[in-house]
Image (cartoon, rainbow, N blue to C red; front, side, top):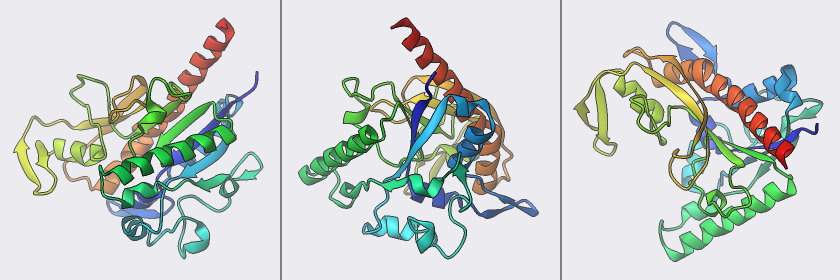
Length: 283
């Protein structure tokens, strides 16, 4: 059986916000912040996941000509060459015999610099998604794994897309509709942290909050990508992260990666491969 070709797509600015690849302050000690990409590669090398998938590309969408990206990546850059400290994963990281650095490629979402919602913005977004699709075609992607891609896909996530049901997202929260633990969107980790304090932020600009029931657990979900925000069908989720009200954002992020997100990603990819293999056998 041939392995499924897996392409990983991310925003490096999101990994930088996590301090991926570096030591973080954790309670009274320091701990290493493993990125989802690094964990994925380790599992591909050391577990039976490597019998199911072949990592063929790592795409990022950052654009250093965009002032916001440049600011968020000032300590990382878009390659280790431009970084004076540790990058998002070790230089020695390889998948099989191939250095992960050799799999990196940039498809910049430059349209984000344009006035949001304008005609040129819409045309730029369409151009970005077309260039991303062209790159996925070039890499012959069977499965596309999004991790912290700070872009909402439209045409690529449509039911008419050639990549329908082939793009999945690993999200640091429960996305299942109706769950009391549901945490969708870019503020999922902060929502969970405030939720453990019995608070809900209703306006992120003013930080206006209301009192809510204390919810002291969170998790992670691997789900199909649709045109909404973390609203696609769930493939696999894990709810295994206990939150204490005194956790910092980095402490909760570290805990949730280790206890829920990494298991959800790996177990979900196993479940996805089983589904695809079963579908192929029926053809």
